[in-house]
Image (cartoon, rainbow, N blue to C red; front, side, top):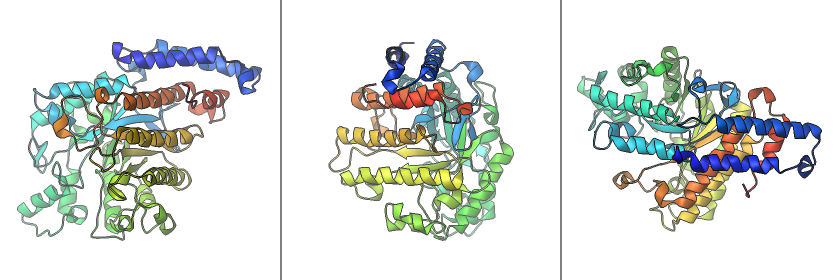
Length: 460
């Protein structure tokens, strides 16, 4: 389809480039030349096998798995360039806005993005999925079915978040309201993490066992779902030791894995360092970050957690005023977490939210492009070494005509051609790497060496 024209052209240009390069250009040997030819053949197959929607054959649409510090699909690396659009289920619940869901996936796919993070919760609110504990609105559930079905059409995988730390879309505060309505005497939203009744409400949430009314596939059997996220940005400020939240993570990660052992699980953390690693708190954006009850390393060591999540918001955590110091923070913040994921966790890390708000003093689109490029380059620096930096998800990606949902962070491709080009280039680079290397290379293959020489040149 035409939407993949730019993507195909990028890959064809890569083929033209490699075919016109001699091994002498790299100071290489005949073995290098053989590897280059093999890489060309792999890429040609990659281009020729491009499906109508997203370049992945149905036979290859398998579960994402974790091997060591990387994601794999069919034993090949799966590095992620993706995005957040949290409101897809709510828009799909209304026929007048359902088309916007299709637009999101179509446009994201056109620039090569392969993973979307979105909410699989809306508790007790307008268009609620869960109207009260374990009582669901079937029409809203069908809307979530549509989101999953539509994502598959465009070969985009989903990280589905199951609850919210914040009050938007209900969050832990709604669970506390339900508890008090049932006669409990709860005084803090953080009782969500500790009270056995509220824990039972969360554990009874039936999304994992849902049978999709569009595809007839049970969610827990659907490769379209990349991972389950326990909660969006959990914090438990009432217990800065982190014990209360850690206990909740351990119980809920085990619960999700018991129901669905096939899918990956992540917590949804922002990445703040806590009491278990006092030597790493220097990387936190501020002193308050150590007091919110989260602990990056300890939390991700919980049994059942497959990969780490980190968010990046210098403009929220350090200062709203745009500054170059934000860029240096982003780099050190990412590198610290990649290092810990490699040395202490032995798992991939996804930078699951990052962006900058157009409402910030001093904002301009050039700065946003610089920040996005900085995040992407840090991922690439890890990728080319076979490191734990497994990908990133922009916050957030919108189609035209959804300005009323914009929190300042929205990226609309039609209004941001330079940003679109940066996203496209990152997608192309990661797609090449995913295609040309596999886990049997052990990150020492000749194709990897050639990729490092070709893939990261600005001229591409």
